[in-house]
Amino acid sequence: MTHSEPHPLNAAPLGTRFSVRFRIDDDGGRHTLTDVLGVLRERNSTSVVLETRSGELRTVEKRRIVAAKPVPPPPARRARNGGRPDDSEQI
Image (cartoon, rainbow, N blue to C red):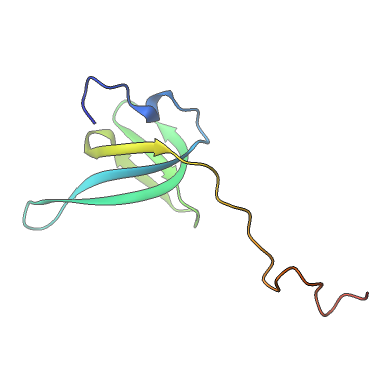
């Protein structure tokens, strides 16, 4: 993201789900990219905090972000038994 573009993470309300790609440094000083998918929980002038599906809070420095976009909520989970009544239920 260029500094002249408005940052989508700055304008979005807390609670918005985002996909964020950012740079990480490896041991050789090269930049490697990685992604995090989560709900925007906090932000300040230098970083954002996203909560992943597992509940982990991931802090990402804004200067490392190369792309960020809001994404829709995850689809509803389907019943494990294929939607059939549980064997323990009386029909």
